[in-house]
Length: 423
Image (cartoon, rainbow, N blue to C red; front, side, top):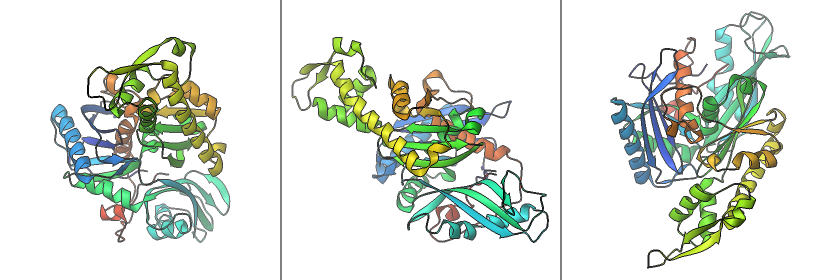
């Protein structure tokens, strides 16, 4: 089960994706089939955010306010609570095991709550995460009774010892607090925080992929984040500090042009893999710093591709090495789904398949309605996934409430609820 704070406006869901290149806000209502239907969309160029972390509080706050205001005007609704994405703070995964005595009686909800008490998770996490990190997600991925593993729901089963396997995601406390404080300065409550690749997977994956094993590679402006799903759960997350903006910077340096012109050329003429057509085509490159307008140089498209391709190859090689080093590659299967704005470059799918040696597709939101074609692409998967996360939390079967934690320094405690869990 996933839990978020109850909304003060029943039926209204709001998601806020704060990235390095754009800030996006979706407002949705439940459709007849229970799925979220987007009724308001707001988007602004991101300012004050670098590699997923806030570096200018005032600029980031203004971008968030403008995106939320545009979504509210389109939806003709006001919101006071949002689900927020997190890509900064170097989110890291840890696999933990917790065991408690059940003294031979049948497992009930009280035993599950006891096994997942905050202090047990914190004690089990000791040594797996460095100082100054906070828990973002704590997800029960499986259970064991007296050493018998592979149990999905142990309630009603007898034994002496109940074990819980957990996937815990932590992030650096400083960047996470800065991001949440920036949202709170916009007079918005935070219902939940979701790491970006997890949200993107909720939006873009189909059920068979999450069961059999799949890797989501969310290619943003400042970071490329990874989530591995298997057996219906997210089992691993990581972040590579390279994104689409690094490609833009490479173009600007390599062709001696402005970042704005480099971004335009990347969007209009860029390709992830070299082709014969690149040798025949040419593009005009405005020269940076020229006082006279229209002073340009002509370069072949192959030169542009020659700048873009090595950076993308490096990104996918970093993804592959991170997964191999963590062991996540063994459970990820042979499937990769690309999301994020940077994944839309032509040839990206083929390059990813070549470097990662897996089957690759580009994912887009499939579990929500109301999106126009312009906002139904991989660049909006994270924001759409936040709505899916919130909708599943609202429709999940009711359980006895989890004990709240209000430990000093724990941002989830300060928000008045314990971290989301599902099992």
